[in-house]
Image (tube, rainbow, N blue to C red):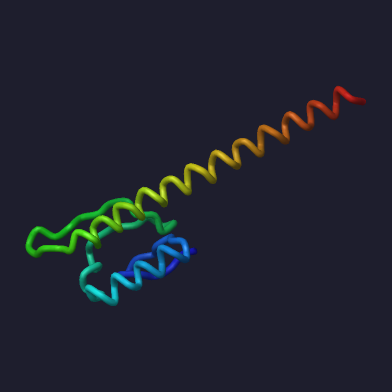
Length: 99
């Protein structure tokens, strides 16, 4: 699902959203502002902790984990679609041979 978070579009699972909101409640909304960048699909493209102030390691760790999870989900979806396409091609070839 895509949510609006820290003035960004962010792709998360329901569990990730719940935890993200817990972090926001604990550390405040301002903690996340300017901390990461996303693309048009809501995928984190970079995490840039500020040099002028400290940040909680749990927040940084979660964003890094979220970024990795997003990439793994995207990879899995692409691979599954590729396999489905290959199966369709094989099924079409088998149907031709059976006739």
